[in-house]
Length: 204
Ligand SMILES: Cc1ncc(C[n+]2csc(CCOP(=O)(O)OP(=O)(O)O)c2C)c(N)n1
Image (cartoon, rainbow, N blue to C red):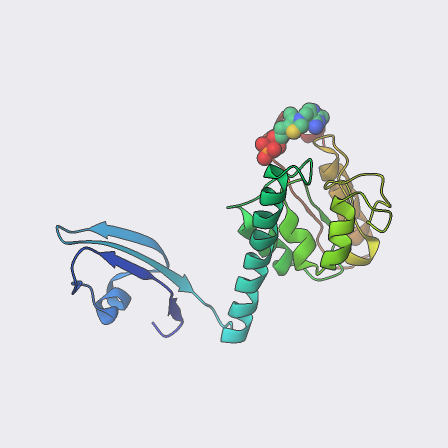
């Protein structure tokens, strides 16, 4: 399996685990695999790397790590009372980052409040993001708001309003414009579990 990247880890209570690298490759397909024996707990993550280079994979990993690091910092500031609000997307970074990486830079994204990875993957400058979160005049919404209700035309990100649902309608409109203009581009909107209960979701 030449296109399988093994990035697994092995924890064991014995000094010499019974699983060798070659046997892992023979037995497993891409995915997360765990197994127990009397002597060891084995946990292996195998990835199908397709035709992606090491440099591309490392870049993807960095794109995932970056919002996590920002969030960890923001959650500390929240607990210290230095910021008043933060919507965490910890543990779900791959949704925002992976989806954004799959798009072209000029394809519109309609993120929600837990999609920091959209903003960072579109490489919005960190200092301006912090201006936004601090409600400073130099933020994207010019000090009117200090959360995730902002976007940037230059980055093809359409900011959310607080209401759940409207991002879907905006994305549909962009998709229609793309179709009519024969642009061959997609638009992407995020939803949470609460959105399907909203009327706008039910009545396209
Ligand atoms: C149209 C509308 N109804 C109700 C709300 C109030 N509201 C704010 S967040 C939220 C829950 C969001 O749940 P979900 O979309 O699953 O995201 P989560 O924050 O749980 O990750 C609700 C009901 C709203 N913002 N908009």
